[in-house]
Image (cartoon, rainbow, N blue to C red; front, top):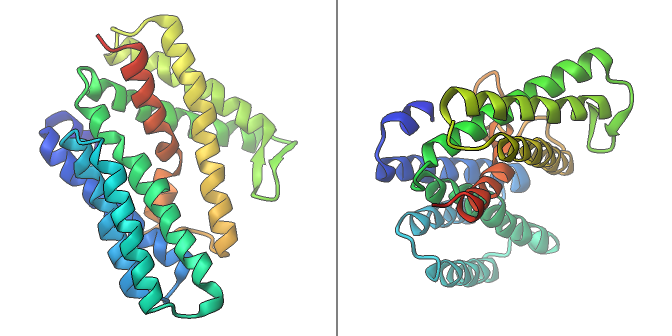
Length: 252
């Protein structure tokens, strides 16, 4: 992603995001539906990836129309091939969740990229989330005693979560002084603070979904590092927030 941000055109970057969304949806659908309704899983992944170009071509009015059409087609597919009837509502709901959770949230990366300072905002987000995750792990492993949310993620602690927020703020300040001087001191602190919270919520949300599916990792697309969603969980919640903050509060 770093090389793409630095050298790729917005169109090529959009293609990369589209492919990423497709693969993430394949993994997500497989995680929730296992080997059932394989055709619907792949169709939903392809349809979800189709959301991303709509962001690139700046057609927000077409987005709800597109999602309605996809919903109706999926409903027809499930009617024609319901599979195990007592699980239809779970499978249909899971497929629709993927369209919002992955396609719609990740799709915000494309309009963020084409903003005047889009590259810097994306780099800032990556640095902040990386610092947040690292700080949360280091603080939690060394001084963490009070469990943050044992039902969902028994290894996470309140101390680690607080450390993650401080790490996120530090990461935002590093980004400001290294490559994003245009943003003020207190605004970047606020952005780092918000991302430190939202990123960890995204992490917990994905952990909840994995526990519901009774899996340790979302997949095995990245050998030794679990699945693609395990790498994107915090970023999925972060990118839309950064886009609306950048467009609403910092647009020239």
